[in-house]
Image (tube, rainbow, N blue to C red; front, top):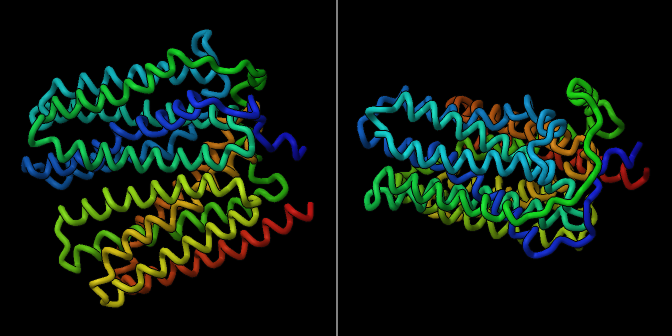
Length: 408
């Protein structure tokens, strides 16, 4: 039974082209969505759009956690003959390129309803692509390579945020709306080109009916050790979500303007997080899963603690606190993603990984939604204190989980 809870890698060693493909897929899937969620808001507001319209744009991000609803379909059905996950990736990546080019042909203000509908389609395709690439990585990566593989995953998301939500927005005054969308499409097409030359290893497909895969999601958390693991996922995600919820308003209250926030948070913060994710993935070769998890949760607690300095009025520490937070919350994300792959069965890799990952996303979104109202009642320091308490409980559970698995 224990063996059924682990992914079986298709090869012991990945080649350079396979690593490059995973890094590319994990980066390009975020480009369009981050541009719309971050940059489109700024563009619309500068053109006089109402706040209600901006709220619709933010709702595009809610598509991502809902991908759990169709993850079993990706495990069950194959598209084309070039490989199970490769077929899904070629389809989604190609459609993303076409949609981005199409969106660039419309006026973002005059044609907003149509632009928004196409953006919604981009969000759905990007979420579907993420399911497929997670399933591919889970099957492709050997256990010793999952640390670096998930370091690439976290770093790819940050790179997508930095490029799509930052650098391309900076080019908007020079190249305009159509130019930005054309550039996004060209960057997204890089992964499609790589996929054409990729040969997916042959492995046994899931023989389970789609209904059985959905039923598996209902019993997944009832397997031995999984409820403790679920508690860690929820608590770690909620802890980081509460801290992030107060970061932006905390900086604004200290007199930071949008340009400075964009530079420190979207650019410098993303770079710090990207470096931390890659280093964490590389260092996981040297640690057991138990030690890496405990250390990762402890590092996240340190990052949240540093945010207390600007919350207590030390304005000169605000920039340092923001960068340290991004530096410290990514290592545990890498470790947990690798452990999620360890707990995914080979024949339901995409479903099992997505179930675990979206559980954390729901917890983070809920915590972020509650963070700002809580700050109005107990202050920024109070919210960060709750985040630290939540993280401390996660640390205790991590020690307990590690010991129980080691004993087993």
